[in-house]
Length: 436
Ligand code: PMP
Image (tube, rainbow, N blue to C red; front, side, top):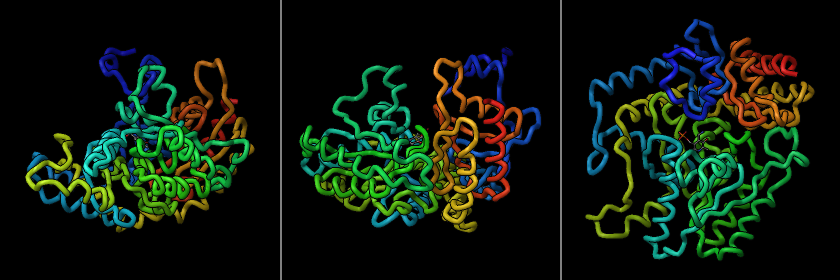
């Protein structure tokens, strides 16, 4: 390990292993990265599910540079700047139904905390302060803060950090390989798993439950596409019991599933939606909570001089992020990127599912331009097989993939061409043979 690599304690990384075999990215453009030693890398995951318009788009770069020179920072409490309003309006216009209020944060994790607090406060301002319980889902990923890891369903968090927030319960996850393996698009079986909510309402009393949070497509825990009818059923049950429905669209937002948001792809409008990543094309950290009109209205009932929602961040609606967001939305609109995944998903699905007979593949899942290829586990080995595929793809084939457990995930920039989809799939096929 060189001294130069020593000080940086890397997030979500096996630091000692990485520092033996580092991967340093030095430059990016369009569909590609270049490593510090000049190798070109095809980006199969949009950085980290975020660079939806491709890398280093000149319009976005220019907008950030100009904004930094014009107005570098503006305090967001009791003050604002014009681009914050403009971006909120543009985001609201993309969201379904009356989801037309936008609260800015700096990350997906912060969006989740904001949405959970908004849900709790919503019930309080309406005189239903007894609704304090939050419902998440097994295998949910909602970022790294305490609310998010509590409603999330990752075992690793419980192993590493012990106690989570109290008053949280979970629905079962929807992954059922026995019934749904190799489903193309939404699996046919599992809508009834939403009835877990009915069971939790009976157990805890529905009047104690504030909100349910789910990812429309669980991304970071293995690309789990919702069974047909599942999200509709959750919506019905939330309506029946006065519970807010939160969609965590940090991955599914901004075109990933073929519409601006997963809510539109799946035809279900939540009460709150958390976004980040693609909002600024990954260029500047930014997230947001998008709320329905009735949520905002509930907060606006009290005296005018009072702060309606006692929450916010120093960098909420940061001018650089707003400038990046506006240029990003312009780019998406001009190039039709928010619906491009719906045009490419047939080709993408076919290419991905051609790996069905490759060594070790036990399931393939896809929707829009997101896919997961699950491999047989290798208990007791130092690394999972999927991680070995990732290493082979990066070091030997010049392709960036992502792995989560035994699943290889793909979520390329939405500007991807068909030949590049082929390259991703061929790379995985080659790597699978080699790691066999
Ligand atoms: N929610 C979901 C659904 C996510 O996928 C992620 C990140 N992958 C987060 C929240 C957390 O976002 P961030 O890393 O920006 O805090």
